[in-house]
Image (cartoon, rainbow, N blue to C red; front, top):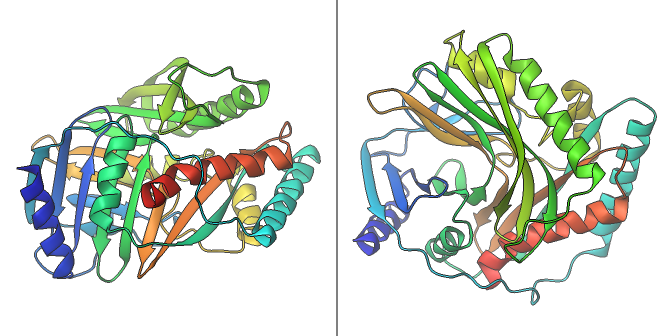
Length: 349
């Protein structure tokens, strides 16, 4: 049955019609939303229904795929073995540039101009794998993440897996998380975290709670836990409450962009990113997910973290890391290398 599901997706792709296939964390159900024509629908006020795909730049308009047809089938996971080598050589020029901007970020933080800034880079590699095969590998490699395969002929093709919830709204209940801190660990043992990761996590949690107070009451904060995403681990804290202001757009504006993909203070971090990153993030570190779906108008949105864009015979991968006063530029570079390996495995494994 699932093979037929994939066949329908492939036909939609060949016909250049918009669709998204996705699986929520810790489930085996793959859902596909298929649009009947190639019209590019834009979000106006987040009262729309469908699957939203929003860019990092909050001033740019989010895209909506209409649920003209919805499919759902179970997918049986296969064991995924990580490849630790055989990846394209890293550009020395890219390495030097990223380390230099990280050093600039650390200097600005230590001069009390920033608390944190998230700096990212784009990696271009050759790709001969089909999008369907990459998506299947993503499903196997990330059982605890939100996995997706998104396409619109007027935007492009994106595939990814993210451990970070932006928000889950059901009736008047809101759930979100703060996610920060990263370490590589290919075993299932919870890693030993350092001061830098805990401080970064606390910054993100504090900011989210502060931003939500105007529209959410009875805010509760859970304990800091460790979560695995592929061969990486992150620190996560659950935050939940009762929605006081029912305008979904206001809640999204309060949360996006989170400090986990931008920094603190947000406006100052955004200016630093725009000045030094030297590329357009597009939909990387934006958000995506179900918008006002079902009879209860359920909204389930995720931050677009581990992801790639496929164009012709090339794949564009996006990786970044949070910079704080305790950061080391060389270690921050290695963090982006480790993060890139998770998606490189989807292409070269």
